[in-house]
Length: 263
Image (cartoon, rainbow, N blue to C red; front, side, top):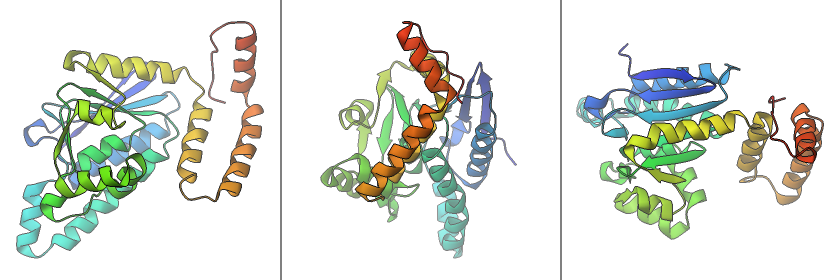
């Protein structure tokens, strides 16, 4: 299996790099399996407090491997190939939305199709000034995949979401920031440094509270209000019994920075 995903751990932060720059880091079956395996291993690694996903070369990820798509369409295996691919990619989308640790997308260039939605599946998106985003699925007569219909419909107005999906236009990093889909834009030279700065801040934060907050945000999409508020109330009670709560309260009273332990 060609190694197209690289892992680097710096202090308590992991940098996961899609590394097939000659092909613009496509999310094909091989890369998908490696990415899934990597983020699963990091979830179980207690030493890693935050994860950064980025790409090498000119692209974050150009999305699906169009050459393989054409080959499968010509030989009558398109449905089977798409089934195999999406089983892996959709596991990644689901895992990231419920991941118990903060995840940052450091978008270094083109983020197209599934590549764009990989970035949007992360908790935070930091883009270089060269970041370019496109929902290119309509160009292939596909629906917005990699959780695209979920992500766009909940993060944009209806009109913005369908325009982005139906036209497949390119959006700059500035465009995406105006839409609220990018947190910060930095120079290419500062992208890695900025992402690590954010990661280090999160690594010092209340990781258990972060994980609970993400889970409640997702549940809020489909849970009736009364039920959701009771769920939230119960989680707040559990949070008040945590070690981090004691640390936070004490630090606030003593006017110190809290040193959370994630428990």
